[in-house]
Image 1 (cartoon, rainbow, N blue to C red):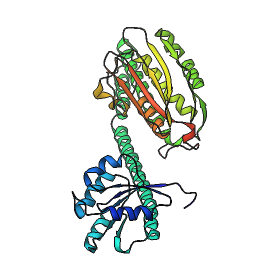
Image 2: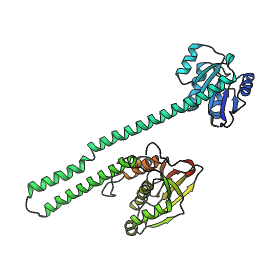
Image 3: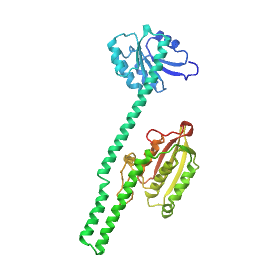
Image 4: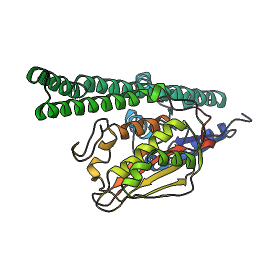
Length: 373
């Protein structure tokens, strides 16, 4: 087993002699912790293990109930049953409900035990990968269903506005354009603009996956500088004060990260209160990722809407108050998810908002993005 990473095993066995024998069996390449009561399992699992080896007969639990309880507590950690109980019915039941193996203590030896553990870990890894693929498929299907709903409802509304008012203008005024006609034209133009904006945002959202590029080193100071140049007019109109702390270089899709930063900073400018916007952009290193933040002194967001704002077409204010389609933050979340990070907001009404997102550090990735992007 030389050269292989040490495997951490949790042995749950009430018999100290059996436990000592198992530790000797697994002396090479394994780290084995032993507990002897079901009541201790949950706390012990917090230490992190690659495999659980379980005797079904414990002082505080017996038989299949023991396995069922440990299986629920173990989460994604594979469970191997090791017992004197040779009941084939019990073995079949345990295997069909998640046990990776069912071994009898009388016949076990070191070679069989090691092989069983390694196979259990590999099988469990495949199962977890399949589950992740299924979760991703379900998420994609849900997004597709949402898109279809939007296409059949929300996207039709501005189109109807344009069509109805143009038809009304044509029937009523034909060759003359009095003030009323101009009013109708204004409605039509407004509807057309809204339709175009909506369609463009939906297309931008749908293209996050298909247009993602290979991840490369990206200087976040340069990213923010480019965004501030694009938003120069809005910054000057609002007399905004923007502070930018020194930012790191990350491994990312530069065009998509620019999109995230532009959406967050633009929102900070848009949703300001009576005072001039004060915006701070900063970052902090973590063990495996960088956390970026965009903090403002704006109108804030009530806690019950902290998750909703990242969903498509979710607007917290009337269009007359604040323009937009309600897709920008959904795009941000999709991009950040695709980079293997997280995005969230901390805020209270009238106390400003701070949007955070994480990107894995370069040391923890190989230039590839998540399956979702």
